Image (cartoon, rainbow, N blue to C red; front, side, top):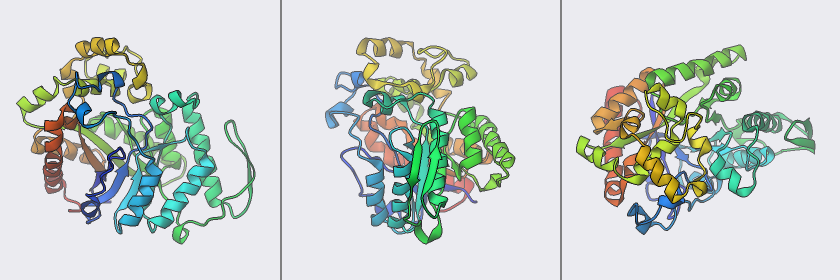
Length: 374
């Protein structure tokens, strides 16, 4: 497939659907909706002491249900695909996931992409959801979803996590086509499962072009081993970046919420770039963040230890033209669907106001360099 951009729609309050017309114009491959109960930003620094964003929103955790928002987007658009980015298999039973995906397939006229992942602590731990063996649970949930989608009548299933007895899902998929499953995967086991089960690959993290290509190779090797066509798995990515001139970026990196982005980076990825992670050499990034447990004192100590050069080594940054060249390198490594998430908006209200324009300029430059849908 040719390269295409994707749009990102926040599912936090206040919910803004005003850009759906532009998102549905043909410019974008899909509209990606994050699925959270809790955000990745620690409560202890979401105060006006640390950021003026706290004056605009009392909490960074004002998330709505992504599947409900996806339904609203589905009936408000006509041409662009709608994708969850990504729903975990911990908080919802796979039978309910299977039914929700079929429902959204009908509401969207077959445009729903089912983004699934194994989950993160911040959305599970505070609510009593067990997070042990999350990858094994994820694989079993996938098997249950596929089983319910492919069976004509009642099914039985005995697994380590799920048990079905005379269970059925008789609602047929839209026009006989089940929604494609795109898997959020970074670690070796999840990459292998993507190759075995996925229709698309949706990694998080800060992979550069070489790292992205190496992980994509793992996905494709697993697909070949499972006797699937590896080229039918769509390589995608949400690209976190910092957009601005050099002096602007240095100003951004002085802001606590931007420095706190280092929490989302793994110790392994920083080590590969020549840096130690302030959270220790076993820190797994997004998977280990528990915002409520990161106290003010712990965060202040962490922020003092963060090397801003480690962040710059981990994310595309610079002017739209400079960031577009890094997206081009990822495309040359195999990337086919990408959305840009400009993290400079977390530097404060001034930067947040400028961010949509900078993202648009970067997208335009990406399309100029790579081609694809405009």
